[in-house]
Image 1 (cartoon, rainbow, N blue to C red):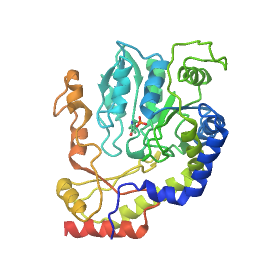
Image 2: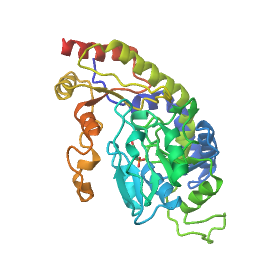
Image 3: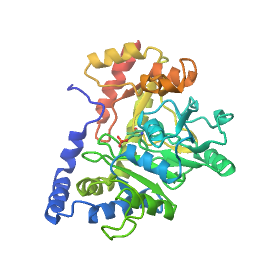
Length: 369
Ligand SMILES: *Cc1c(COP(=O)(O)O)cnc(C)c1O
């Protein structure tokens, strides 16, 4: 068996080669490189996919998080509640707009924000909650939206790992005030460079973000600027590539879910805990993440067998050197820390073959025997 990668972007490209190459060359022929017809089409189609009224295509997920927060009015001195087990971009966005991140413990079944632990964290300075749909599992949005209404703050959902996840049978993207996606190449929907988007049902918010990403232009008048914005545009080539891939996204999510359930069926050891799906959720399985107290030994073994695997994430944010100034310490978030010590992501991508899942599962079962 050749090395099995965690994700294999080349395999996907080979299957789409002709379509992708045609999309790239027609964009070159058309030579509308910024905010052209492909970007316009992608915004319309991605909003429809997410069951949201609007989507704005942007330069990256990180920029999208920042724009969502700042456009919703989050500023210096405000507090934004988020989780300590996420990729650092979530917190970079909060600090980037001058606000203070306030960490909330996660719920151990789903790895997402535990609404029951929000008590005491909401203050008069709380301007937003930024929950994360980690590994593709949606957070429990409904009680968070209720709290937002009661306390008058915004909800920005970090769905950078969760394209295609559903909450209560409804696609995520139109439930929170703003939902943020990343099109980093390895994500469920990935470009061939950087890209991101915000989806929302709020017309005014979408219009303002659309202007802010393009030097504050509200209209097509090139040198009339209604806001001080910046350049956070998605480029047309990435949009052309995403337009090809978006057509396959639903099929890919189904493939991810089938492969995940095959893993859960085949890996059979009392030392391994499978990922779970809350009753409200359709998990989009960006990552298939098992838990084991013998994680480090298992990881070493799998790597020696040329099966790639990775820890997402080995050091929670409250313990990161860059965030020392928040004054948190080991022991502050027990469930998050337990997860960091036990999680392991196994290879998962739509083109992965069932026989590879069988091979990996078999290796894991044998390791624990
Ligand atoms: C990938 C990711 C981001 C950032 O997205 P970029 O497009 O790489 O800037 C933010 N949050 C989470 C949880 C992510 O996984």
